Image (cartoon, rainbow, N blue to C red; front, side, top):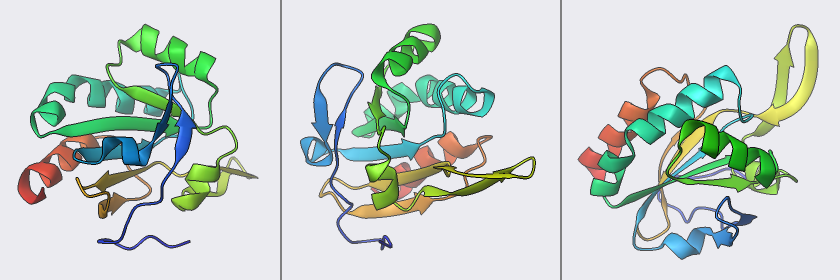
Length: 155
């Protein structure tokens, strides 16, 4: 499935770190920063999560909710949140269906090995549930500020 800016973002129904199951539609009326990352506790993912944490109040001030998604189970998410004081929900996409719906479950290569995994990506979804912006193959440095600026200027 290819995503098109301006069209409805794919719905999801995932277990969240608050013990509830959350759906995209639960957040209608708010801007959503939906970011997909490969794995809790790894250097790049920790840096990205902490950058979102450090800018959390700025996103809240723009009526935006941050949701992090990875294939990690909830127990691992809980440790990640506790260790780094993350103030936003992490969603467990263990069967990577949501990652597939967003086109971020891809073939990756590392040290000559090929495997399927998450392509670090961020999607901004507007208050009506439509896709406003997509970043794929995200480089962590400066990315959170870029997402924040997009919301400030466009939503």
